[in-house]
Image (cartoon, rainbow, N blue to C red; front, side, top):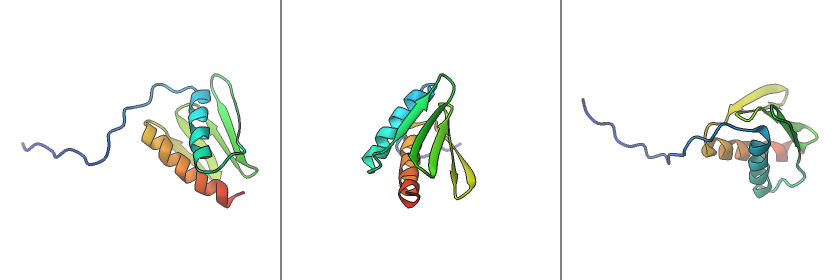
Amino acid sequence: MYPQPPSRQPQYPPLPPGRPADLLRDLAGLLRGHGLTRLYTASCARLGVLSVTPHLTIWTNGRHLRWHDRGTPVTCGIATAADLDQAARDLAILGRTQA
């Protein structure tokens, strides 16, 4: 058996079990870095919601993000910081086009 070469992708540690408020705080910070500044959040122990534009609202249970893109439901699992960073980039583009 031959050893496998190491991955060239950076290895991000898994995120701890998420609380919706924590995930939304981090996501909102990343979205602000992408120029979206009128963000509104609300959360409780089990669910959280982030309003980005009148047409883009993101729901989370602390481990998954859910939103609609042109009427189609989208679910994004968040296991690492890289997942959250990629989701923020995608949502920033979507937020600017749906503004």
